[in-house]
Image (cartoon, rainbow, N blue to C red):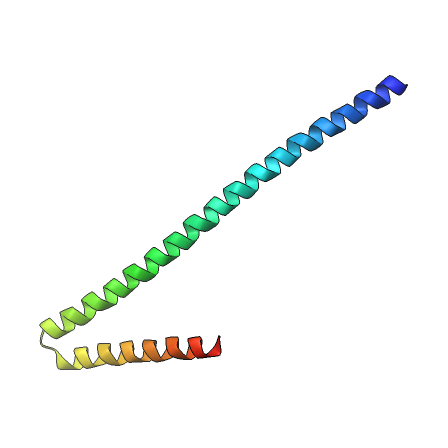
Length: 89
């Protein structure tokens, strides 16, 4: 009876250690995924900015002043929105 209890406790300890190791591995994997997600979000933001810059350059080069004015107005609104967000923080 006492040997069975010892065996059971040893099995529980072994399972606990295995789960603890798996938990740490998963935490590291989560951190890596979060870092990758943050890097991808930054890349998306940069690419969106580049798209807007190219659209603006295209509007200016195409000689369409109304399009260019609309693009500049949109950029100004975006800048104003960013400034207000920074002021709130």
